[in-house]
Image 1 (tube, rainbow, N blue to C red):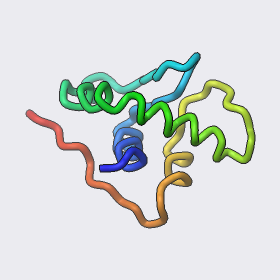
Image 2: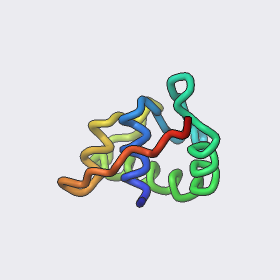
Image 3: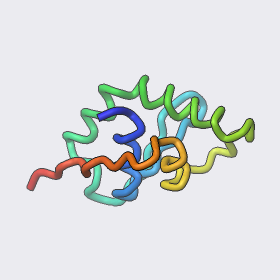
Image 4: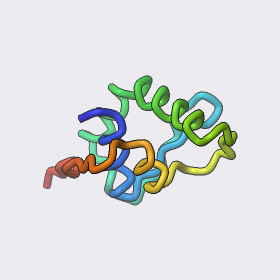
Length: 91
């Protein structure tokens, strides 16, 4: 799964990711961030930060105001018709 698909999946689950002072900030509903997802985020942190920083550039030069990245923004960044399966949750 590439970075845009990962972020799209997380956003669909209510997870909001943003870059703040060169750090990855994550806000999610209770219970969404399983150990498996936390591990994926930790392993791919640099890649996610790079992608999110690049998305600021893709916003037509409009500077980021520190707000969370939305599903609409993720949708614009992903390839047309790219639908990823949700990250599986373990019982």
